[in-house]
Image 1: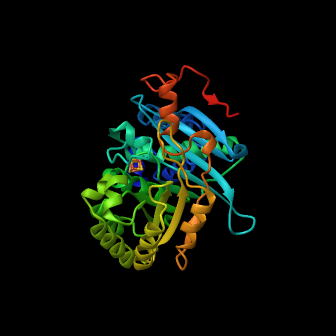
Image 2: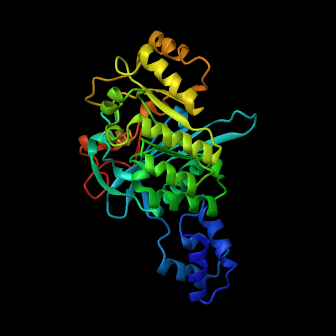
Image 3: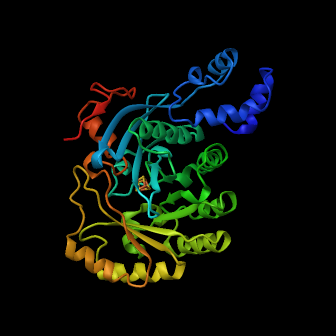
Length: 360
Ligand code: SF4
């Protein structure tokens, strides 16, 4: 809820407007789990909030830990029983003494884009998330981090289930609420798209401070048509023009995501083509060795092939992202798919097993 609509509700309850700030701050405290815990508010106001508002639109259906407890994957149950995945990761920051805690949120239940290397793509699209459901994933993850002695949340990435710019209204509203109500700076928010070119232009106008990431995965139309089927609607020339315009309008460096798949997009030809487009867009490249998914023959390349691919990107800013949470099926859609296959996840989003699922 934005500050403005909260102030309107308070006026309706006969409460002063300054309470809005107090309530918004409290909703972002990771140790507060209900309006009833907001002891700084009069009891009558706590009751009024409880009667009129929903404290959270998501709850944790299942939780998995990895990386010695530094990565948590949450299966979030929405109020209609559908589920999405959210990941919280804490890692040492580049600046000494300052750690970073990143939350990866889902924007849709499933996804219509259908990338063949992605577990979510196999599910199809059930529906889009509301802005509240996106924001509440961050709050839920903040509480999960706090419960493990980690956090606070410093970064939010829109890289979970779904295509954020196919749900642009809710995505942008959630970004505005995050910036307005939490202490997360826009520069620490990244929206990742599989290539919705018109959405990229809209993003530049509506949220110029946030970072744009593009799931590129192929640098020629022929291969990208196969790996990211949305490419048939917005081919590379159109997509890259939108990326350049976004960079010119926002003065923000874009990121190209590259899921490295053995024998598919790990050739030197693809590396050199990637180098050209990254140079042209002044983009940072994030290489992510593929997380294996059940029932797929695809996987990450061997060390020598990966090294050769990275060497061919000389002169470009490149980060190799570690596959944090590989032991918790942390690539998007994997945890839900596994729990469904094991018939642990019921259709109403509840589990027929303990909520905390141990990782051995
Ligand atoms: S990779 Fe992203 S865009 Fe592609 S199917 Fe998966 S969630 Fe959708």
